[in-house]
Image 1 (cartoon, one colour):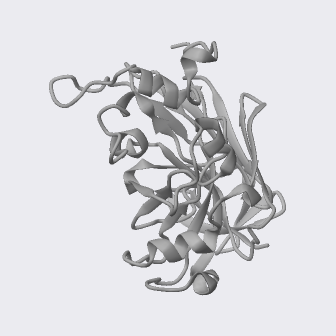
Image 2 (cartoon, helix red, strand yellow; image 1 turned 90 degrees about the horizontal axis):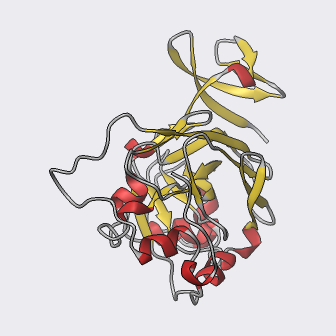
Length: 281
């Protein structure tokens, strides 16, 4: 399956194709993939994410499958790359990973049937839909700061075309330990359904990204942790958590909170009955 990457090479943004352990730029230059400075593999005009899609995630929260999927938006400024840092602002504690698969649009898409969606998809990449749950009490409706803060949308390492999403395994690792283990077969709505659903009223443009949901066991991470999301056939996306240099301003807007809702969401629901300790700061 062809895999395309965007990298920074000698100061310029170039596209490259992976050949084994090497990347080959369009001008023929070669370099080891491990030495490349990666960029997000696509440049979307919008990033749209589905809320609950994996059945294990619904079971974790005791939620019944909704009649139809619901969505939220992540700004394009939330993007970061394979190998990049994910920033937890000072004063915040509840930064959660969510390993996911990203659908990348290849052709302008509007008002199509699910059976026609495949022809509008360029390919797929690995995603980590990080959430800063400290803002859950104030942005519960829009999820804007929870899911849209800077660096909370790593994508990569590459865009894989001609990939069949059926029966594929998704795993998230924190510091080498498997913390999420799911499959695309547990999705309530598959990739083609999601594309067609969004495109009923929203025009999807080439490069646009749809995040397809995470399995159970999203949990908080802290500065110093290394988070890797591995998807069968798509590769492994690696990021590390750092503390931001500047605290969230307190002279405007709502402040980060640690309510029961924040803790329950970050720790998988009913935290007070499970004996789970809050994350180390």
